[in-house]
Length: 49
Image (cartoon, rainbow, N blue to C red; front, side, top):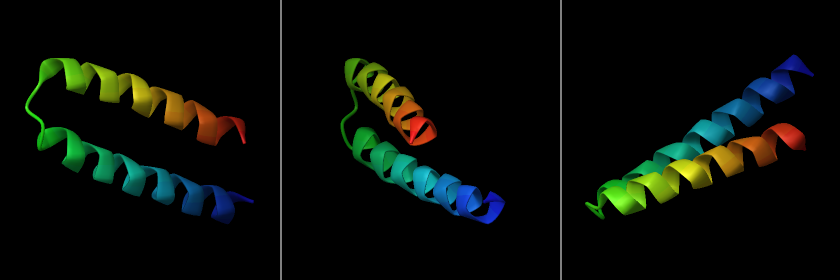
C-alpha cells in the first residue's frame, strides 16, 4: 500500500511539473492563481480516490 501511494505521489508531482511548465509559458498572475486552484483541486481528487 505504501509503495502504491509513493508511486501515486510521484505521478502527482510529475503532473504538477507539467502544469507549472505550461503556466510559466503564460506570464499572467491571473493564470497563476487559477492554476494554483486547479492544483489544489487535482491534489484533492488524487487524495480522495
